[in-house]
Amino acid sequence: MTTLREAVALFLEAKRLQQQNNTQKETEKMDEKQYMEEIKRTMNYEIDLDQRLSMLALGLAGEVGEIVDHIKKAVYHGHEIDHVELGKEFGDVMWYFYNLMDDLGVDPDIVRFLNVEKLRRRYPEGFSEEASQNREE
Ligand SMILES: [Mg+2]
Image 1 (tube, rainbow, N blue to C red):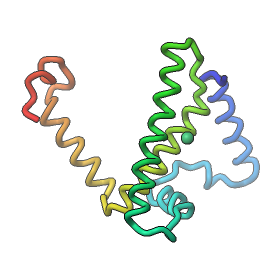
Image 2 (image 1 turned 180 degrees about the vertical axis):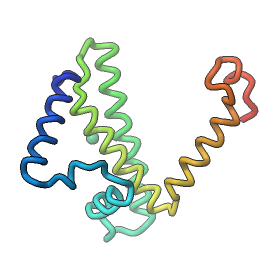
Image 3 (image 1 turned 90 degrees about the vertical axis):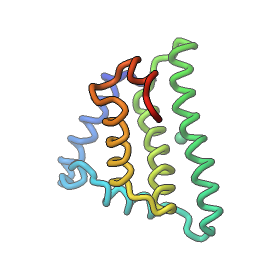
Image 4 (image 1 turned 120 degrees about the vertical axis):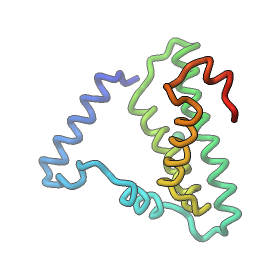
């Protein structure tokens, strides 16, 4: 198990090594375009769209389940959360999620906009139980 402190130390050490290897560019925050290029590189485009959609939806559900399992083990079995392993699972979720949006032609910018717009309408003053119970949709 890796504690949060150990995970941060590992991250900082990895970042230091990258800088030392003169790959400073790689340590910069990855934008969505770069991320899409990376994940599309490992997508299997030899299978047809229906197969990809099915594979991506199943894979997404499976990876969300892996995150759920980490939480279950922490809450009910007393495990420490391994933030590095959990981070890898979030990465797996992102891989499926972004590839699924890409194959469906869904623009992540529009998704973010629609989500924020819905939440502002639903919770104009921020979350409250009253607003949640009386929301229109
Ligand atoms: Mg996984």
